[in-house]
Image 1 (tube, rainbow, N blue to C red):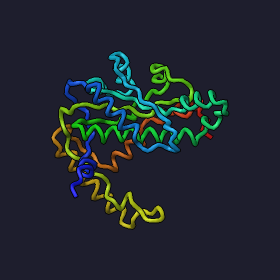
Image 2 (image 1 turned 30 degrees about the vertical axis):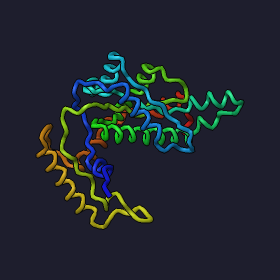
Image 3 (image 1 turned 60 degrees about the vertical axis):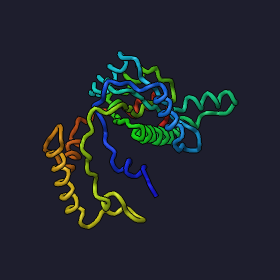
Image 4 (image 1 turned 135 degrees about the vertical axis):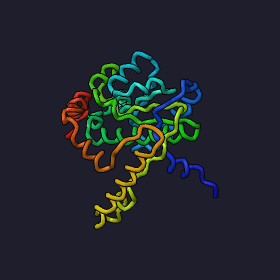
Length: 249
């Protein structure tokens, strides 16, 4: 049986260089429709999508993320955790909406949003588009909340730049399956160190031989560098989530 989905999934690349061609209204509608058909916790549909079309706002998001290349994408979405809409429904029905402030419901919003945005990525690739999911919108989540005028019980989670690829990078190798897939209990393999050394060598070769932005780096170096970044970066997220009405306890 011909299966076009698996090769597409196995060949995913993040795209950061786009042509100047904007997405059409029909293409945007198709991507939103794909997001809406993603699985959703208890069918509560606890997320919303914001299309960012204002150039000034897009530039401000570029400042927050540190990635102004997003401004040249064919389209830019921000996906938000959203219990505000369901609170409006509850209040109209005279039902106590207190549970919508809970950690459980915040996490449900995160799950719904993440699955929806992956559907956008997959749908976009099937349409010949490329994208990058951007957690860097959280570099200054407070400013973003103000820029987007987000009400209580909403929170920005991810951005996605999507458009027509100008350049398709080489395929980046992933961790070997034994380091991410276990049976019945969490247990790294006994030869973890050796497998990590092999993967570091594989990833180093990828970075040194790819057709652009070559550099010397391994997976081990990447993770330790992540752990060495300023702990103050995004340290205010829990406070901001609380200020938006979610009680993480």
